Length: 449
Image (cartoon, rainbow, N blue to C red; front, side):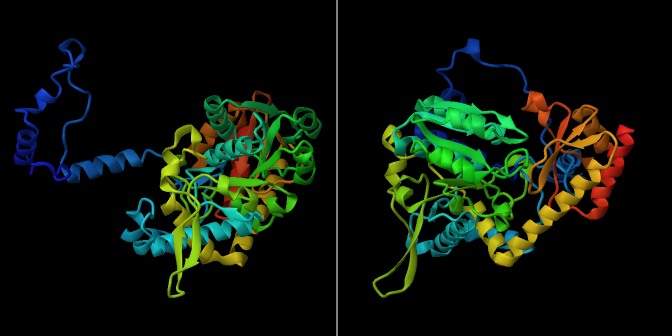
């Protein structure tokens, strides 16, 4: 064979053509008019040998500013965390990475148990009764939570804070357009949801109030007060949370949240240029049958041996169009497994320790940066591992200069918040060292002097 990655030989092609009764591949496209066919040559490189191709792709990869060669302070929903080697060891086993969805429990007990453990640990972190066996990512889970709320309450208004991740809000608006409910955004006050505005906007027509805590700007929301407002008119409270922060913070379930969503990316899943990741959705037992996606249940067989099965939902539910609870048709089982292995490897104490390191290092960084002439902390509230600084130069310019010094700077908030032009969202996780934080501070000091 000429190319090892193209498994069909010329003989294979001829046999397939004869089987379907045509003479050539060209006949397969006979119905396409000549006038619309492209007869030029695509601007693609010539075929390469494997050795040449590997060198070519390696050179292209080296142009990326990867975590291997750069110190990153970029978060905004996707974070660099340490991933224990056991995570990739387990998810690289073929019985896990080849599985789609474990419809056949008799041959999928390992995967089903892993997903069950993921659900269990997410429930412990969020303080909720039941969690599903993962979703595509955090923003997808948030949109599904809004659809759940609209279905449960039979109301058509979703009130969401502007402190929720901007891309999650965009996905929610896209979802709402198809499902016919209204999205109302609540303005901010000092980097958190404006509670006075929330009281005015959340009324008897509101299906859900959606907030994020820690929010997109890194700040902690007043969930106790938001819960009262959300439930005053019998709407639901949906909270989006970084699951790592829940190793230290009081879980949303204890504040009275009805649905808790988020992205499990901090738990053993690499940034990977933004995906694929793994969303989670947890809720109260009363809403269990409204949960989208998969749920794994624990049971016993006729001999009393513990076993696991997909439960509560038939496969056919996901192809019932407008009558379905959800049209999410897959899950992220492999990435949910990665999160399960990560949480199991660290344990409860380990999760708390990592969360505490994030908190302490971020606060050291905020103190260190705020001492620099030309930098101010933008907000006065409490934060977890991200915070906002105000610069006297455009963030884009600063980040280009930092990149030359081997540093990936923070997120330019002017991209989504015009009122926060020249504001940078800085993320500090457990992998950042004191020396690296000091290096960022010294670099910024030099650029702003």
